[in-house]
Length: 118
Image (tube, rainbow, N blue to C red; front, side, top):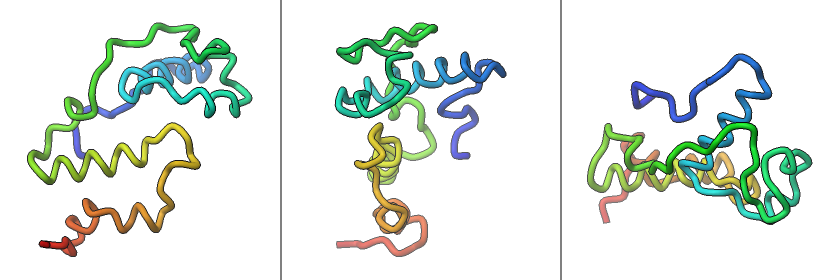
């Protein structure tokens, strides 16, 4: 929405291959998922070994940062936005904010015009 390119692209209409590409791209941007998260996943063995090392059917692209992917903001606005996005993209859903907590994030408060100037 904010950038011309999506954060995670659709690479193939073959859902299995697309899943592998998407996960590989997520690893390139977010880093590897935590091992305890992988151990709770029924399908993690398809993409990683017992130590969490990638073994998916496609290679992981070169690492990239969220900072380099989002160029529409700078300064404090970008810092707040990236903090918001990182929280939403947390690998472990138990670590992600609730919808209410996400709604109250300082970046969204700023977007709504409710920013705290203190």
